[in-house]
Length: 172
Image (cartoon, rainbow, N blue to C red; front, side, top):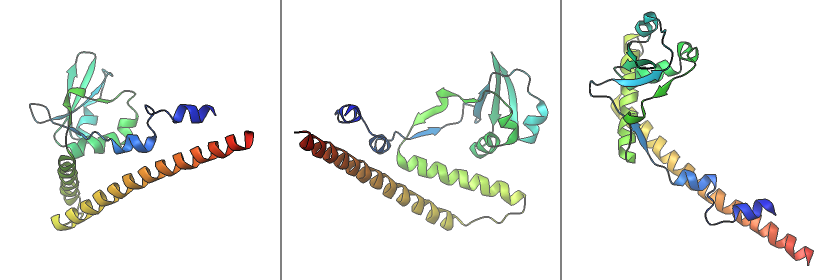
């Protein structure tokens, strides 16, 4: 009964509803063209910056890592070196709202950056047409996923409310 009372409120949003009301965000470069990460650690080896192709700029209370590409930033974030750092955060002033098309374009740029970096290592580059095709499929799958989550949320509500109704009928 407690769960029904809490979840039946018009002000309560289920996970499916939260997913439907997505606010798209993107990470933007600073005035100098760098993508930034902040760490409060003050002693960072310059070798790490060279290994992952970023500049280290001392900042009050820590250091800024300045990446020339977004791909380089995310590649570093999943590295073992990043896992060794206790505190890493994005610069909140460089995260902006955007529309879905901008996200689509950004993801294409990330894929191209990754492919260009892989070409240096001898990996063959995918054609732009193939990248666009894969991205379109990804967007379509995401749309279908959101629709399925919405239907699932509605079904769960119907099942739950129906179960409460039958339970109340038995109590009478």
